[in-house]
Length: 224
DNA sequence: GATAGGATGCTCT
DNA sequence: GAGCATCCTATCC
Image: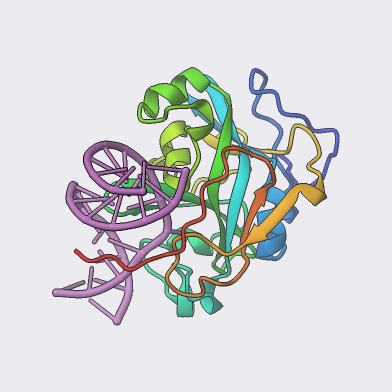
C-alpha cells in the first residue's frame, strides 16, 4: 500500500514507469457527483502480463446509493452482488449484466455507504494493440472503450477485479490522476443512459468533444 | 445515419 | 418469472 493521502498536483501519468501514482483517498470520500466529475480525465490503468495499459476516462455516471432508484443499492439493498459498493471510496464495484457484459464502478464515500460512479467510456491511451485484440468488433480506435461494457472488455476487466482497491498502485487495476488538467468548462452533464428509474436526473458527465463518449439512448422496455 | 430486435444468464421480487 | 447501469447486427432510409 502506498501513502495516498497527500494530493500532489505534480503527479503525472507514465504507463511505462512504476505504478506508484494514484489519486488521494480523500478525493473519493466526497459526494458522488463531485467524484463523477473529478474522474473525468483520470486514467484507468490495467496491468496484464507484466505490461501496463489503460484508458483516459471521458464519461461517468453517478449512482447515489440508497436514495437513488436506479442504483444497485437502492433502498439500502445489500447482497453478495453489491457488497463491494459498501467498501471505502476508491474500491471497484464490478458487476455482470445482460448475461454477457462486465461493467465497473468506482466506489465513493465512507465505508458503509453505497454510492458509486459507473465508468461509462474511455479512450485507450496505452496498449491500443491489446485493446484491439480484445475488441475485434470495434471499427475505429475511438470505439474500443465507448460504453461501460466495451471499456471493461477493452481492458480485460472482469469479476476478478471485484472489490479491488484502485488506489493500491500494485493492484492489477488502478486509477491515475489526469496527465493534464481537465478544463472544467469542457465537462457536460445530462440524463443517465439505459436506466429505468430516475432516468431524468442529470447525473451523467462527459468531456465535450471526445469521440469516445457513448451515444445517449433513453431506456426503453424490451419484450422477450 | 437511425432504429429495431436478438443474445445471454444473473438478480431480485 | 420479469427485468436488466449492454452490445452487435441487420435493415431501412
